[in-house]
Image 1 (cartoon, helix red, strand yellow):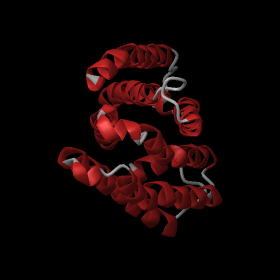
Image 2 (cartoon, helix red, strand yellow; image 1 turned 30 degrees about the horizontal axis):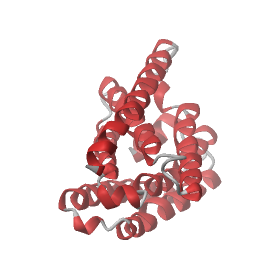
Image 3 (cartoon, one colour; image 1 turned 30 degrees about the vertical axis):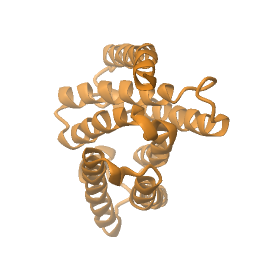
Length: 215
């Protein structure tokens, strides 16, 4: 009965989150002005990740679902990654499409039983701490910013993910466990590429070249 009530309560948040990001993507596409990575811009990405992190911190601190439902965080993420997947398909960006598909597949698990109580969605958003650093580097192309990005990426996506895995008890759900492992392997692949790039870094590297080297 509890799960049924939650499913009914989820729908308004999920629809709102998806509609918000679809409209956001449509406006971004219309105003792209030749920029094919308009939805992967610093402003859009930081808006998603920083807002998601702030809401997650607030949710964990308040710790009262009647005041701040975990569903808001989950819907925010699903809505964004659904729009992001559409963008990846339009741009034929295979690696980031996999990332979006994994996110869309994994986030709904946050509504299930103990995972909802453990606020798995909010805890997952701390992985996004590396995103602002990534875009700062793309903009500056400085080696120092790249080092900050790699360190943050390593902390959030290589060290924290196994901790997150343990915190939410992902081993109790085979599908969730496989999904997180695939997500982890994807991030290891990105980290490996980024590490190789660091040893051959050129400060005058074009941002597009930098992006393609990692992605």
